[in-house]
Amino acid sequence: MDLTYPNEAEEFRTEIRGWLEENLPDGWFDDDFEMTDEERAEFNSTWPQKLFEGGWICATWPAEYGGKGLTTMQGVALSEEFARAKAPMRGDFFGDTLVGPTILQWGSEEQKKEFLPGILKGETRWCQGFSEPNSGSDLASLKTSAVLDGDEWVINGQKVWTTGGHHADYCFLLTRTDPDVKKHAGITYMLVPMRQDGIEVRGIVQPDGTAEFCEVFFDNARCPKDAVVGGVNNGWKVANSTLAFERGLSATTGWRRFAEEYRLMTEAATANGTIDEPTIRQRLMEYYTKIQILRINGLRNLTSTLNESKDMGTIALGATNKMFWSEMHKAAMELALDIYGADAMLIDSGPEAGSWPGATRDKRREGYPVSPMMSSFFFSRSETIWGGTSQIQRNIVGERVLGLPKEPKPPTGD
Image (tube, rainbow, N blue to C red; front, side, top):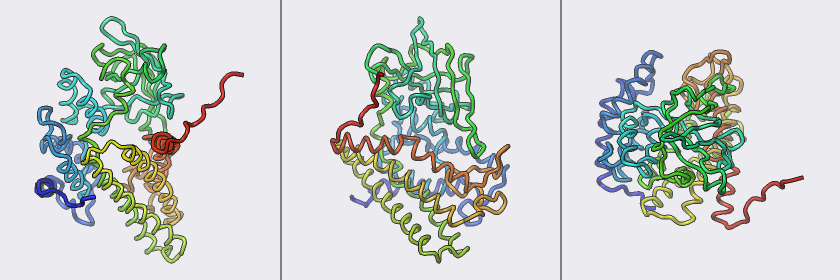
């Protein structure tokens, strides 16, 4: 690994840092900075427009499509400075991080002109329509169908765990367009408008009272014939693709959220005396060590990206990193509960709202009051599931990298 950043990246870093200092609210960088609920709401509503005006949303996209055409290392510097400032960097995660890059790589010119401006401006909200009640880890077994009717696709079926589906304007949807071929070969990737009579969205209430995950029901819903991205029956390849210029941009920042948690844990353990317990000290050091491993693996991933490496080691790195950090964080949140004790479950005296990644901003949710600590604890349990379960990641490493036999399928028939 070469840990020296090129001059162009460091010069660009100075520009970013100056912009953040000028545009973030007064006092943002002070240790005791806080915002009222009204100030937070105002910030959340105006910040995407500032990001757009600064050109920071999707800044690595080519200039011809509204980006800045940043190099990979300039993009890394951008991500690092936003992470250091703890400033939101995205307009809509599903739009600018997932479907936007997919449209850039696979979409037609008409699709790029229609959808990319709304993503860049933060005006269009997206959701991901992949998982189904019986097609989670085995996503290729999905059954939601799309049948061509003249110039439109008619869609029927159900998706589940659709984050933000109740707010979305569009869904990037995987559908079954050919049921007579092998399951991976009959899938098509479509861009479907959500606000139509043929779509019903129901929130799935979680233990912390939130309902960001949704069920989505398609009953003769429709989208234009040209809403297909990457070609009919080519959806599996489209869904699994990743743009080369997007790879590695968060490689050097992902560990920071955990480092902040570690800091909060050590402060709390020192204050309440649990730091004197040998098992607590040992678990804290294990967490610290794993955070450093995650940081170093991020640099390895960045180096692999810069070298345009496509060997099997790169494939393994993505799977092992996801498995590593999600299982690490699950154990870390169990440690946090042991440090804070019963205080973690108290609404009024537990850790402050917003302190913990995954924690709800509000201290109380209608029907189910939950502390920020417990909200983050619940969230950590899901991290080993979304984005590919730990079991699936182990299969990827075992089968594609180590060359082990495929996982045996369950017996069929009587």
